[in-house]
Length: 248
Image 1 (tube, helix red, strand yellow):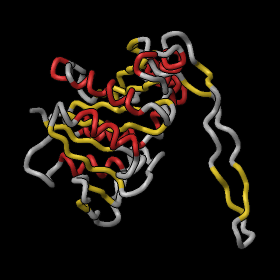
Image 2 (tube, one colour; image 1 turned 60 degrees about the vertical axis):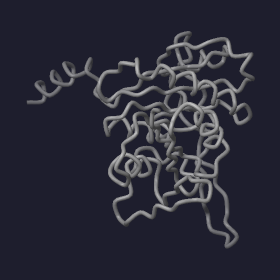
Image 3 (cartoon, one colour; image 1 turned 45 degrees about the vertical axis):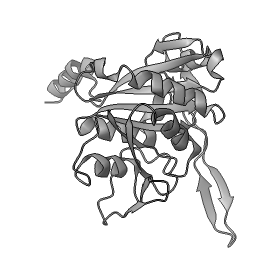
């Protein structure tokens, strides 16, 4: 039976992680290593300034007082002798669409698995109700994971509409859309009268064309976007070289 490592960024007690575990446990041997608290927005950060505590829980899950990337690093890279065949991160409480992938701890956990040589999938539910639907999507995907051939340093970002299973219209391979600028931060006062700031909501959709992840989910399809870790804008290299040549 295949060995899977599960993690997330919503924390080890999150309903989405439990739903993922329950959906996949009939199909694979599972190990769960997740943050001990909500680490949404942690992106790819690793904890380098202190040691990490790995704690076993009564339900067999493991919690880490660190980031999602820390959890996958520990789960893959030497705490146990046997390595997983696949890393799945999620099920996130809310979508990871477009620019969200730059900040997402859910995507970061999958990316850390990919960086360590694993096939990796990030799972998100675009809402907070139908985790069972997202779990069934995950079970469907791992059934064919052995046949999946991705270029090096790639992973899949999966976003599931918040719908009952029988209302899902199918699966679509998509590209990332993108959002407009985020709203201004919200200024508040703490109980001592000091100014503080809340990071505001993400910007509105700026590119939600028919082939994007935004459009697929809006139409009731599961969005599957292949992601790469190479952020180089290759098409701009010649322009930048020309700019540098003109400077010198």
